[in-house]
Image 1 (cartoon, rainbow, N blue to C red):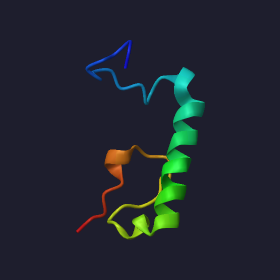
Image 2 (image 1 turned 180 degrees about the horizontal axis):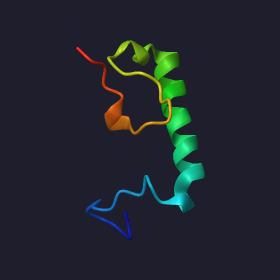
Image 3 (image 1 turned 120 degrees about the vertical axis):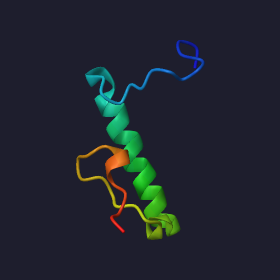
Image 4 (image 1 turned 135 degrees about the horizontal axis):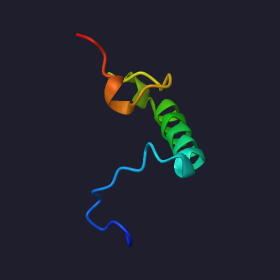
Length: 57
């Protein structure tokens, strides 16, 4: 928030952040699974970006 207070720069593709991104993504899906949140229309990550996981209707 200090270096990008308006959150304009997405760091998802910056290699220096890969380990932290992977850990947070795993934590998110662990918490969703534990709380029953995976019944939402999302699939756990399979390598593609979050916006690409929407289920086809």
